[in-house]
Length: 592
Image (cartoon, rainbow, N blue to C red):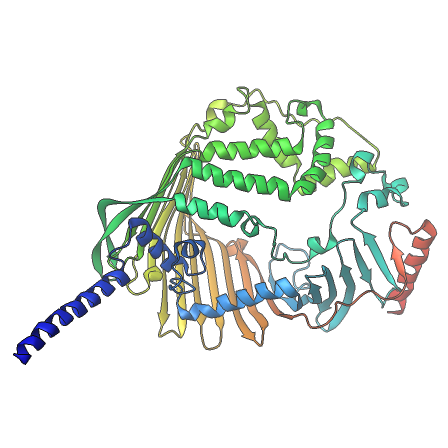
């Protein structure tokens, strides 16, 4: 009896235990996940636990680097370390040399080999102060190019070998300080409409960009906006499958449709628009002065938007016209719920861009022209050169061109892209894809690519990418092949990269080869470019150059140096001060 009672007790327990195991397996494998949760889990596995998708979906248990294997961690760790240093401050030492110059077309062939430059500097990102010491080297000869001190208000330069003290150029009041100096009598005065707006931060201009804590992604309201956008994403299982080669076997991968509703896309874009105009209001106001002045130079600009901000808002409106549709992305998951493929296609109503500027497209032509005129070089050439010589000619931009055929403007534009992974354990080990943008008026750009990422026992990483690029014009077509190959050795951190561009006749147009090492030691990043060779053309038309360089970054441990001696403000110096200054330099060069 006792044995029978024991059986009655053991059997239910065993059944419950088996059921618990099966239930656990089903939960772990995602059998009970909704379509959205399943797809987001697959995307999290692809992009890593640090991605926004992983954060909002709660998939924090996936690998930090997603599909990226361990042997890529060194590069990612170095990037994270550099980002951290840029937030706190860093010291940098860099040097490069033109070790070889191989061209018969460049004047001075052979004389420029072994010429180089060395830079040592400290950047305090918290106090926004920087210091750089530049030295030029030619064979065994070293020439100081000056010590530079950068702040938000000014840039200063010292050259102890040539003159005492240091020169200072105020940048926060550049326009007004310039007009108060001796330069207007020599070069001409900056118009009063512009002088107060011509200012800039020397620190921002010459220092590498630092993380922007006020960026859209870091804004306080963005997190909730993105979370709402994520919550509104719709995912449904279509019931269709697609046969995809995974490893060496064909798999029927389930198709899922991700839908981004038009109103949600517009809401997110409008949130970015609001942030953009709020965060850049001061810059926009400064640019508006230039914009107003340019418009005043010619009556052709009379019908253009009255302010630079209005121009930007019209551009934003144009983007909103383009994206004001539902967006559908199709993804395919393999038997392990991994992202095996993804595709996206959309037809945009580009004709709406033209129509919103009017039937005669005058403002559209103006938009193209102002884009050319606001080029940096043109801006200084067209505005400041004419201003400095006290000459205000009517600028004939030839905006209105009656010969323009409005029918050439595409009414629609089709964009499609796809990527398919074929790896077994590591899906991106082999992949292929395409990208097409077709303006539906005879012009198109299509790229088809194949690639692979593999490792030799986690010791050497190989990456190969081949791209076939086809450009179609109204009457002409061009084809190019791009080949990229890289290998990374985990033991000595050596990275070799080669990139080749050839035309449809297999003639080399460009070849780039680099051999470098990257190491991270005690929070110090050392990058050694042992060789970078750039070759243009082929055969008799071939020319090239070879460069080697070294760069190291380390955390800032001391205060940034400040200039010493007497300050010489370039905008407050008199003509006599300049004469004495140039005599001092001449004497320094003579004795040097």
